[in-house]
Length: 322
Image (cartoon, rainbow, N blue to C red; front, top):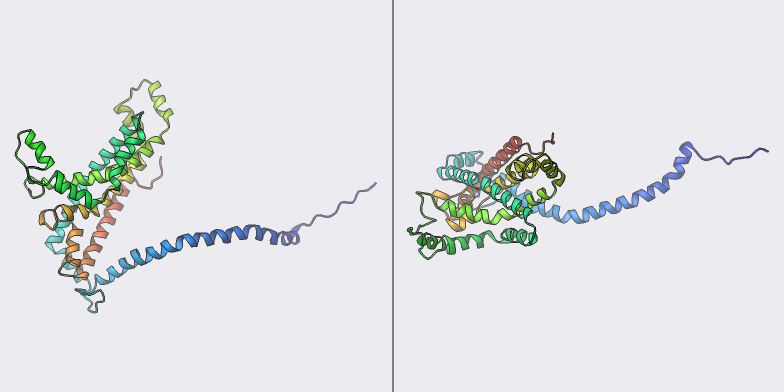
């Protein structure tokens, strides 16, 4: 007896029959996701354009105009503002001050935060307590920390904490922020920045350390390697390379953005005046020269970008692992 099987729709006709169902199931979630994406992103995007990109663009425009005392200049001066800033002895010396600060603070912060992370990672009790204690200064204001350093620890009188310690060892008090030979002010500036940011980078290193597979250490112990510098050099340090590069880049950028500690500790002094403090007095002080200030800010931004890119190239930032 022959059996009749109902034909199954195939080809373009079957696809047309399934299309409305597919579009309905796939289209509604996509439209909903897009609406949610723009709902959350639009306020931040508007703020980013209004308070970041537009001021940068307008600053670039001002740098080519004579904009003293006005943000709506009319006299075009070309690159004269850039030439003036690059020939300004005070501005070029401030760039040197920033470079010295970066040379001092970047390796110091890297070594201290890595050492703290290794120590906190090794402790077996109260790990959360130590992690919080070292991270807590990150939440402190740079202005408040600078004033504490200036008024309590390194205030330059014999009653200051640092001078009291020197007195206990029979030494004379030191005027920490006004002595330029030797330049004791660098100790004050570097130590306050180190105290403020070391905990943040320690957390980054700590997260990377906890992601290292413990079987690697066990294999090294089985091979007869004892815990210590050899394990750290050949296992820990290579596996921390991506985090180390990120920390170095962030430290360098943060060093070239230093302002609060310089402004509150030493002010507008020639021997320790970074570019941002000089530009602050130039553009927002008595001169109100927004054209020169904008040109100096763009020169500084270009210098930071070039140094950051070169450092990233040298250290292999973004390069795939072998």
